[in-house]
Length: 391
Image (cartoon, rainbow, N blue to C red):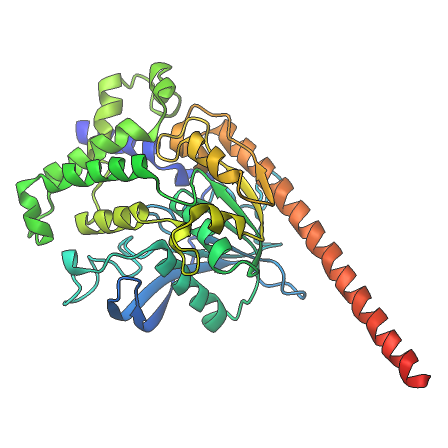
């Protein structure tokens, strides 16, 4: 009974993706890239990318929106944005949605599902740019999508959105980044290293070649995670009471974090390494200059940090937005820490959907005006040519 309660608490406390699940399961697709060369120089004979799509391309072929996954999530991680009701920013009846999964999540190519010589701890460190490159190939080669209305990302998905805007500046009209930055700064790196250290201190870890899961290490990993996921004020006000069963005690609430992480330990570490190494400034051509990379962004940007995020602090986001020309900087006024960017509570759900929907309407309107202007310019040019030939 106690174990069942712990599992239930874990689900409600730590799974914002449970909000607004679609009525039908999403269809899983897998695309294979042969001889995929990573930034580390290691070549994976087969890089497998899991994805799904919702909706259809419209006649103008201008309604594609990419939603790349966040830490250890699958393609259900954006259900809080998707629906056929007025309170959702994305509607499959109108939008063609492409949802992709990061390498290392246990479904796309990961340490846990890749054969030797790259199994387990021998799997190469994958960067955010590696993920963006793989999805770019999926879009252009498999789905024949050569332009996106927007890239929308939460957390590590936001990291990908910023990288898209730097690596492929004209491929999308806009990006939306919630609870995530364009670089993992020193404090974030150290926090992740603390979690990795907690996990790997378990003797069962065995350098990543464990025969049974390092359970104690995974529990320690979860407890470190717990101290950073929500804000200090969230804990002081006991907001965990708002989404746990009546009668839940404080001890039951925090103890639930011990069971939060039950996937493959090498997968957790791989994605943490991906997170740690992210910096748009190290994109080829920018010479490790993050500010210069941010200044290069041409797409419209809706930048939505959580005011109480301990993973991606407001100070980092405020610093970055100053270098982005077309930015709309809209902090999320929430006590829910990092999870605010994934609508972990009704207030943030409403705020995010309203702001994202309004932003996307503006982007679509601007795109329509630009297209009309381009058509008019082309017609005038053609008329001028005809007139000149008559003369």
